[in-house]
Image 1: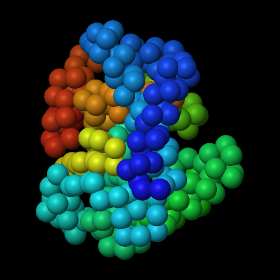
Image 2: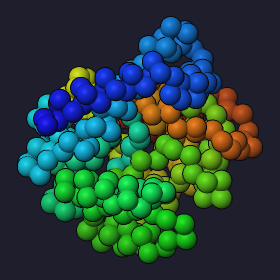
Image 3: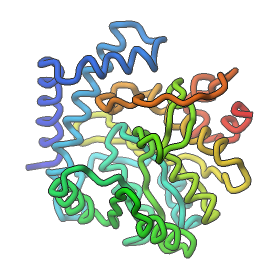
Image 4: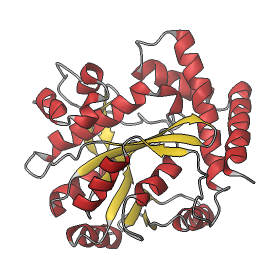
Length: 301
């Protein structure tokens, strides 16, 4: 099956799930909580799109092939020369992203501007071992090394740190989902005081590599535009400050493309005690903080 056809089929089934009410209340509640500025009709339209987007992602990954274009040919880098420069200048970097747009294709496109076999895809292990194995196989043939993290697993983190420090690998990391309370750090995300994954900041500060935001926005079935932001050097920042800048960057992306985010995950199970913010960089500056991360640093201060 062609990749574009698989995405269309997945999108249709996603819309069917919406019409059947599958997790629709979870999606509606979270969108109302995080995006109160949108009208009811705007949130409803965005919700339908997010069902179609998730369906396209799920079916798309299992339709990938072993050829040179496993995700089809309908993608483009918004600035190929910039992406190439990032790959050449930073042989080791943290590519920070989220469950938005075509995140499976996004990993593969990111690898395109790196030398072969130079990407570690860092992910939390699934509960089902068989699903882990299947996803691992589907993703690995696209050119990356999959690292699935489990509780009390230090070997994966040490392997990742050594690879980054030696410039042997870059790391692709999705950091938007909710960690277990004991494994996360408090930060504001989408306007909520909650616990967040801080692995990107920990890796970046321990290895002195930059954090580079990246995303692939779906513009049609099998067609995406890839964006790679400005490197964020957080080595001299407090960890909590650096984490907040990263969460603001991800929040800005979600606010800009709410119909392509994975709202189905019940994100805010645990709330943290944080001092109220006078300003939120993601609301004030929008996508500008992906190209000027210093704006986020200033606002957090």
